Image 1 (cartoon, rainbow, N blue to C red):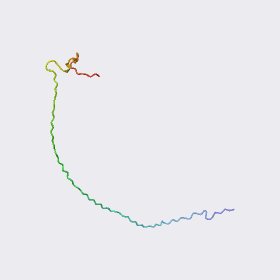
Image 2: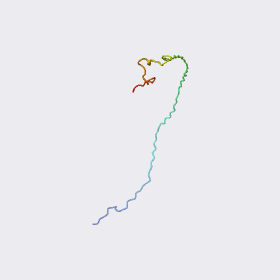
Image 3: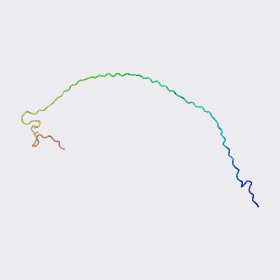
Image 4: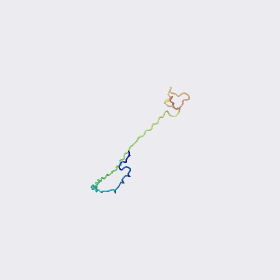
Length: 102
């Protein structure tokens, strides 16, 4: 048996023809609104005058001072409230300041 080739087999493919692209132009129309705003402003200025009146009141005060001196005895041996009987300083304790014990 003989094998036959199917019809068209082994033939080179048919060439492809490409045509130039056909272009179409479609025009559309649209509308928009542009708002142009021209603002205006009025400023009302109220003027107020403040008069500063200066006063200079003056007062006078008085102060009294009192000085006080304690004088014990007169000329002669040293006397004072510590030289009363039973309140005499011991030997070596003369007129030394009193020291508080710690």
